[in-house]
Amino acid sequence: MSDVSLVLRQVRYTNKAFWRNPASAFFTFAFPLMFLVIFTALLGDGEIPIQGVEVALVTYYVVAEAAFGVISACYTNIAISVSFQRDQGILKRTRGTPLPGWAYMSARVLHAMVIAFVLVAITVAFGVIFYSASVPTGVPLLQFVLTLLVGGLSFAALALALTAAIPNADASPPIVNASILPLLFLSGIFFPIGDDAPAWIKAVSNVFPIRHFFEAMVNAFLGNLTVPSAGGPVRAFPFDWWDLAVVAAWGIVGLVLAVRYFSWEPRT
Image (cartoon, rainbow, N blue to C red; front, side, top):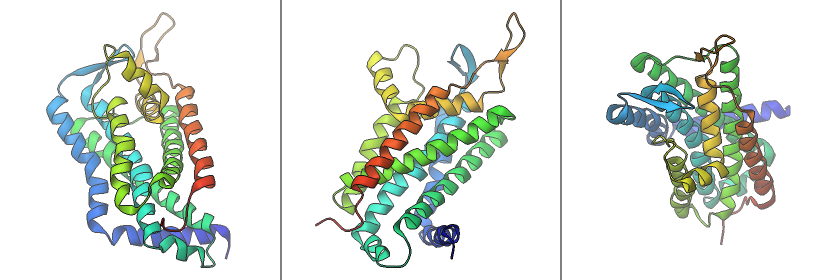
C-alpha cells in the first residue's frame, strides 16, 4: 500500500472516530456560529474602521469567527484529543502496528484541516445568507484559501508541540485554553482592537501568530473592496505577505519542537 493510501485510510478512521462522539462534533461546529450570532446581536449594528475604511461589524465577525473555527479545529481539538489518546495508550499501541507514526499524525492533521475548511465554509455561508456578507473572488479568494492552509498547518504543528508540556489528559483542557483564550481576546477575534487600545496589547498580539493570521484573513476576505484614488480605484485592503510569513514561522517552530519533544507514551 502506498504512503498516500495509508494516510487517506487513516483519515477515514479518524473521521469515523470524530463523528462517534456527536457531542464533541456538534460543539466543534456550533461554537463559531454561536459566537457569530451572539456578537452580531450584541455589537453588530454599525461599522468599524479597519485601515481607515469603514467595514460593517457583521462582516468583521464573519471573518473573526471563521478564524476562530480554524484555530479550534487545528489547535484546540488536536492538542486535547492527542493528549487523551496518549494517556489512554492509543498512541503507544499505534507505534506497535505497521502504520508509520508520521502517517498517523499526518492523517490527524489532514482531518483537522478538512474540519477547519468545512467550518469556514459554513461560517461564511451563514454570513452570506443572514448578514449579506460578500465572498472574495479572484486573487483575494486564492489568498484567503492560502491563508487558511498555512494557518491550519501552523496551528496544528503548535498543538502537537504543546502536548509535550501537558503532563496528563486531565490537564489538557485548562492548559490549552490558558494558552489560547487570552490571545484570542488580545488579537481581536472576540472584540475589535481599536487604534486607541493600550500599546502593550498591540505589542503582545503582534508577537504571536493569531493576530497575523486574523489580519491576513481580513485582508483577503475584504480584498475585492476598492477606494478611489488619483490613479483610479485601488484595493482598500492590500494583502500583507508579512502576516502570512509570521504565521508560517510559528508553524515551523512548532514543527521543530514537536519532532524533538513529542511523546507517544503516557507520562508517569
